[in-house]
Every structure is written in structure tokens, then in C-alpha cells.
Image (cartoon, rainbow, N blue to C red):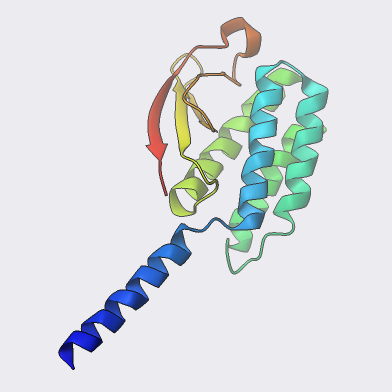
Amino acid sequence: MKKYIITAVLTVFSMISVAAQKSNPALSKLYSQYIQIKDALASDNADKTSQAANNFIKTAGTIDAKLLSEGNINALRKDATAISESRNIQKQRQFFYNLSDNMIAIAKKFKLADQSVFVQYCPMADGSWLSNEKKIVNPYYGKSMLSCGSVKSEIKK
């Protein structure tokens, strides 16, 4: 009897573990759009950055408040709105600091992608961002210092 109870408990825990490892489609889409913002900043394209931020805002509006608190969702939308409304790449990069810090916190709590997510850091900008790959593509300096930075951590979920 004890053996069956232990087996049942272990089965439940393994199912919870598997469920926790699945990515949420809305958060995965939000992360994908964050990456588009990062890539647009790295390519020094303010218009593309603004459009990517608009897409991010739309997806943030679809996130269930049971998954992320309304305060967290509003913070993401506020940062992305500031990026989308600015047509100046330097100002967009300034707003990207907060957006990145918030997305890093989310990445540490939720699985955002099927592969590892890398937290990267630029000492010149004193800013971090998320990436799908280890290769540094710096959104804070773009083409002028595209490879400045390093991988600070890898988030595996």
C-alpha cells in the first residue's frame, strides 16, 4: 500500500514539473516580440523599433492577469508605449532598460521559449537584455558597438 501511495505522489509531482516546464503561448509571443524590439534597436532602426513595441503592447494586453499581475502587465505596456511613441533611437534605448529588467524578471519565473534564454550585459551601457543566443548583439549601442557585452547567465527551464 505504501508503495502505491509513494508512486502516486511521485507521479503527481512529475506531472506538476512537466506542466511548469511548458511555456505559456501568450508569454512566448510576448518574448518573441521583445526580441524583435531588441533586434530593431541593435540595427539602429527607430521606425522598426516603434512598430515592434506596438506589437508588444497588443500582446501584453492579451496576457491573463491570473498569470501576471495587472501591475506587471501595466509596467510592460508603459515601457513599450514609451518606446513606440518615441521616434528617437537614443530615447527608445533609454526606455528599453526598464522593459528589459521587467522581462528578465519574467524569464526567471516563467518558461518563455523552448530553448535557453540568455541574460546579456553591456558594461558600457550598464544595461542587461535577453537573447535567444549566446552571440552578443547589443541593443544599447547598435552598430557602433554591436558586440560589446557578455553573457551573464543562461535561463534553462
